[in-house]
Amino acid sequence: MTLKDATAIVGIGRTRFAKNLAEDERTLACRAVLAALDDAGIAPGEVDALASYTMEETDEVELAKAVGFGDLTFFSKVGYGGGGSCATVAHLAAAIASGQASVGVAWRSRKRGSGPRPWTNTTVQLPTPAQWTRPFGLLRPADEIAMLTRRYMHEYGATRDHLFNVALACRNRANQNPAAIMYDRPLTREMYMTSRWISEPLCLFDNCLETDGALACVVVSRERARDCPSTPVYIHSAAQGLPAQHHGMVNYWNDDPLTGPAWTAARHLWKHADFTPQDVDVAQIYDAFTSLVPLSLEGYGFCGRGEGGAFTEGGALEIGGRLPINTGGGGLSEAYVHGFNLIDEGVRQLRGTSTAQVPDAATCLVTAGEGVPTSALLLTNRS
Amino acid sequence: MLEPVTDPTGAPFWEYAARGELRVQACADCGELRFPPRPCCPHCQSFEEEWRPVSGRGRVWSYVVPHPPLLPDYAAQAPYNVVVVELEEAPRIRLIGNLVRAAGATLNSVDPSRIRIGARVHVVFWGGLPQWVLA
Image (cartoon, rainbow over all chains, first blue to last red; front, side, top):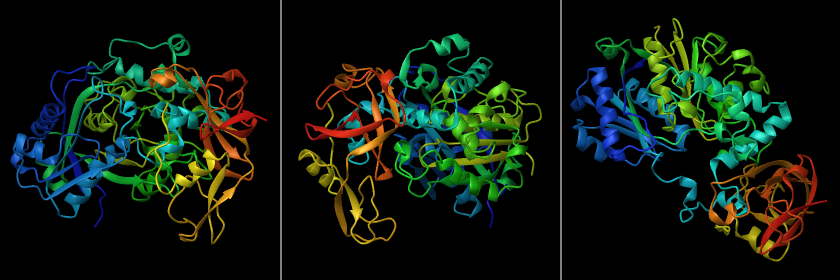
């Protein structure tokens, strides 16, 4: 048995994105899931598999009884926040390819725009590794990743202009996408360089948005996909990655802290693929922070070690560049919903329906969060 | 300010720190240092451990300067520094802390423009926490 092209994403759905939506997370989850099933032309009663994030607050029971799923025979949740995004789809693909289920739904619903920032919670502080970091004021994901970013800039000569290139590419694509939070707000280098700091060396525009919204997608077998109304987007290869001696976002305690989970996921991803990084037409790269993008470019093999900053030069990440990324605007400028919007945008590109369409796109890499145990998908419309 | 929420594996670090001693967990069989502490040795799988004194000398491996929004006690001192220090005798053992003017000084007592990766530092203790001063 192989996963290669055995399953396809045949439906995508989302709610509106906003800083503050009136409805609760459970209602938003129901709306996104039903929209994805409607897009797939599949009735809720046919769904028998679910996958989501451990941080998802709407559980399977609540979702199933609300939207009218059938009998479920597979349900799975993946940990590590945004590192689990692509793994939800990967788990469904494995379940369907191995005969555990036939129609799978993955989803994420989150009110991170109007709800609390997780780092402000001081009562459920995990005993480890937080005891080694939080008392000293390393409090937020932005602080933890800024520490690795400073070291990366020091070791390889990456600059703030490189990080700006990432922020700008995402913002330019958001300016083409009416659904994006930052649709009508262009970004300039002047704005970037004079913005307030969040955690030096990361400024405001190096940080993702804080968004309310929900998304979902539907996965079925390649045979079933032929009966669905949209172009099937095949799951060509899928991988998770948790490297030996990895420590999550505070990955300061091994021989090479800048070689993160992307490298582990990438080895498996490419091992099972019929194409190479040079054949990727468009990529959706997890961008909770701009600096995760150069690291991911290195990890997934688009450039050599330490070359991720330089790779962003000359408009490489823009439409028409070497590797257009985050064509809906990404977490930095469309919406931050733990990376699920990157999956849906990957599907849109391979259907030819993106608001920033890469001409004739046939292959798309989608990644989950670098800097935490991660996951990735290679998608294609050719099979 | 947040106090360390300790666990059984990490508690000895804080007990030694409260006495003004910097010690790192090591495997009592193969001798490998490990940080953060964990129940057994990832190299030889031994559950035998010892807490080995280290010199307290090191170099700044990286640092950040957080700005608000932050928890109130930290916002009151922002912008301040947080450093990762790699220990002289074991560069892979890295401790998070604050570079301060002297033991007990505030988290913002060193001008961030004076901080460099590679700067030599040594440990001091205040209130049961290790802090770092420029050597």
